[in-house]
Length: 301
Image (tube, rainbow, N blue to C red; front, side):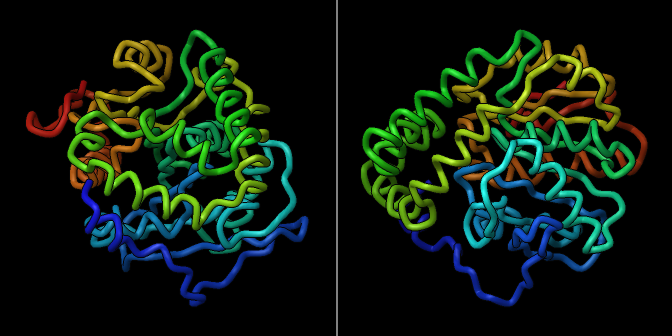
C-alpha cells in the first residue's frame, strides 16, 4: 500500500451508469462490469464507496459479472436514512430491476450483516456468500457495538477527520501502515474525507447499531459461505471465525496473511483469488471440503 498506488485509484463517478429508484423514492448508484460468468455482487460497507471496487477487482471482472452499488445515503446514492433492515430490501429491489435472479454476495465489515440478512430473507437469490472481516460471532455483538459507539463518538467530537484517525490504525494491518508511512496515511485520509460526509457517516453508523446479532441469523443461512479475514484483523480472530463456521450449515474459513480488516485494499490479488476459488468450488459442487488456500497467500480449511 504505497502513495502512488493510492493516488492512482479511480474513485470517480463518471455518470455513465443509471440510478436505480427504489419503491420509497431513494436512488441507488450502481455499476455492472464484466462480460460473462456468475454474478458477484459487491456490497459496500459504510466507509467504502462502490467506485473503489474497480481498483481491487480487475482480475475478477475477467470471468465474472460484477455488480457494485452505493448504499442509500452513501456516495452518489440518495435516500433518507432508515432502519438497517432497509438495506436488504434495497438490494432486492436493485437485483429485481436488473433481472438478476441469483448472485454471489461479497460483504465487508458491517455490510456482511446486510449479506447475512439478505441470505436469510431471500435464500433462493443467493448462490454463495463471501463475508470479509465479519464483525459477528456466536458470542454476541457486545464488541461490535462498543466499536461502533466509539466511532460515532469520535465523529461527533471531531468530524470525519477524527473518525479517520481512530479507524486508520485499526482497519489497516501492521505491514501496510509500516510500509506506507505518513505518505500513505495522508493520501488515504484525503480520499476518505473527499468521499464521506459527516452526515452520511453519522446516519450509517447509527443504522449499524440497530443491526441484530441473533445467533439464529447465522445458523439458518443455507448458502455456502466463505469467512475471509486478514491475519491482522482487529475485529475478529481465527478462533472466532472457526467457531462461527462450526455453527453454520456450510462454511469454511480462510485467512490472508499480512493484512488487516480490509484485505482487498492490502492484498487484492489474494482477495480476488479467494473469491474466484470459492465461486468455482460452489459452481462445481465441491465446496466446502476440503477447503485449502495457496500456502503463500493464506490459510484455509
